[in-house]
View 1 (cartoon, rainbow, N blue to C red):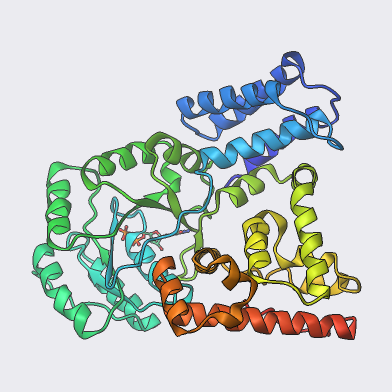
View 2: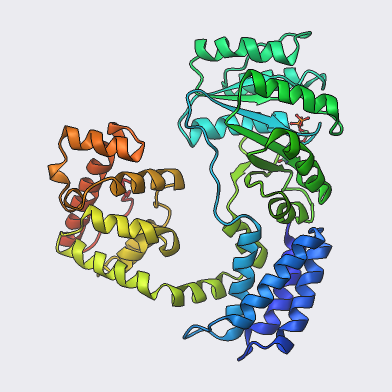
Length: 443
Ligand code: GDP
């Protein structure tokens, strides 16, 4: 959906890439072109203005790093500002409570029912929890059947809503049903209308009173463009939205919605719907989308490299420690902190002799974000001695760490075990001088 915007911004950025100096004069034209491209992509004009002002201020005040020319630096500034507009980092859905309740709200046709099934699969496959769906959209005639069919096809428990039931009654009864079916995460497909009206808002508020959701996600159609900003604001007033699912991103929408909603409403985009199939749901990563829009991986990584010299030193130190078999949980924590920027263990591996090929295989083995956060929380709850020597972790220490990090003792056990295994394996590989294909990093 961002092809046009991407092409235009890239064409204008090419003009500054070779510049040896950034001045107000030589970026003026480029900035004008970027402004136009954003407006053409249907980005809200206020968002465009703030964006341009920030890029300009940063560009003129930027300290140019060694080994990078000012034009390349400018591309990086535009990229970082795009990431900011899109919300910074990815924001996960909150399913910590048991059961957790997620309300899906939105206009008719936005994709709520489809999203309910997509989200259920995501929760089951990626978060390892048991989802259950509640059809409560009694206004669109086919919505209930549609959700029940999706439930059957994908083996997702679905509350047997009967024709004639009121949404309040559905939700009341679904509480016991969720208990009986041992559902961890309840997804409520709420009523949609063609437009926002008082009646709809009244009903949704009442439903919130019956079963307070941890997440109220607005499902919004990206094809609506800027209009979806108004819809989001409307729902947000009454419903206190916690996030957004932007659907039909696979269509030929101009992308303005994604770039505007977050900035105008402050509501984080959590997922993108990228097709009609139930698997077509992506977690929203602002940096990936900004990367897609700019498609200038070469320049970005060059600038990032220059900024990461310090992190590289820590990777080099870790590699040395692995060789001496001295790698501790403390080092592991340091690595985790720079893992995202650095590309994870792959980078450490680069500094281990004979590991060049293997590092490619490790590329996709960095733990998922949720897992990383857990690991970090656990290690942070350990004392310095414990991080240096996990062998002293007896049952009571493990319990203390689990409590301190908001995790379970099993999580602490798992981390310690995996860490020891990884250390052993890395030590073994060093002795062999080279790993064999198909190795899987256990984190
Ligand atoms: P609801 O009224 O909000 O429950 O909307 P539905 O879930 O019934 O979706 C309306 C239409 O949009 C259906 O034809 C869906 O297949 C389609 N749809 C939903 N999400 C997506 C998406 O991410 N991409 C595409 N291309 N179509 C979608």
